[in-house]
Image (cartoon, rainbow, N blue to C red; front, side, top):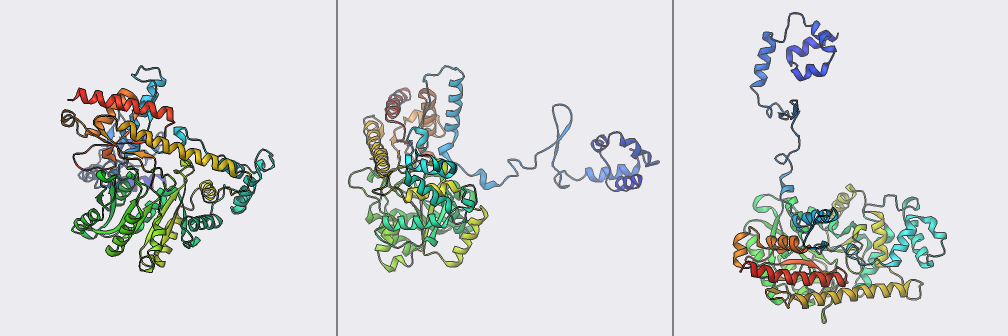
Length: 549
């Protein structure tokens, strides 16, 4: 039987030498049944000639290549040439080549290599706890109780923390945070989010059914972009994003194959948003794509501006007039420092403008546990609220979210604590308020310090850090350095890293007007570290300027 099977396969698809090797000792048995058909038989030769005339690619097989030990190795199925081309277009400067080099430098320092600095100070990303910010005690107590319910009998935990932990656990399947939740998020948490939004917005109603808990704000933003992207060629969806922008937007649009429409913030007016610039960008984009959405980050990242209520009203009117879906990234809503500045939610302003807008303008707004005074980036908690979404699209949104099952339940629990913190009279209230106030006050002091120090350096100009967690100063790079480098600001920041150990992100990673150069730095390092960082930036810039002048 084996002989017959081999005979058929021999005639139709000859075995290669490699296949015969794999047969091992059975090869002689099989070959014995072939009779007079030898390895050099006419049938085999003609079959080999026919197959060899076909390229490996046309035969649907990976190309083989000779390895170092002389054996043939099959090429990879997935290569840089055969992978999804849109992924190769994705760039994310916040964790780009400078950060990779910073990690290498840390390793080299730990191995005893000599450097002109003793430590690497990373100011590239808004990771609050990694920079030394302390977590809110009440939040961690409740999460600890939820993670290990046996602690509920421990008298060191306050009663309000225990009560909140029990409430959260009762909302979880099997009373465990290890269970899946509904795809839209735990219902009781969505209800608490809705009540929080109503309080924040002065009583503007909020329907829990319009709340979707997400894996950080990023998850919600990317999900909404997926819904918006459609069309081909000149009808391909375009999305308006601010320049400078947070690279999540450009990266997501590149991956989705959407068209990025840049509108520029006005650096000379504290990174304000001009409606005339929105109109310019929109009119130009309509020549080559179908603009569908307008993204706003308020307070701004990386620019730190806080939009005025008047500006928000103008944006809403613009979106209504031009039939654009509004996306409001409001993850820094508690991070407002400058005197005279105040956070206004797009949802609140929208509803206070009356039914003409509140019943027609489509809006998705986003919040997160990662920023503000919480800084709990690793828990990946967030929510989005949708307004005036088509019912059929809403059903599709729910379906899309169900594919990823649910956002992390510990992140949902943390979001519940953020929107429903300890109340007056409860055991944890005073400590919570003290910690929250101290964190925000320290951030405000560091925002002012950063602006003041950078503005003392000739060749660096820094707008006020009105909010958020970053400064985006403009730097003057000598013409000699500009000519020497492909990306002058990347060259500047990499050289700073190698000489000082300071890790910043070049402005080109966020977008900037042609001919201008910037870097983004977070204000999150501890005050003593921040002062060291700022002094090193000051010294480096003066040295760099002299070297290339």
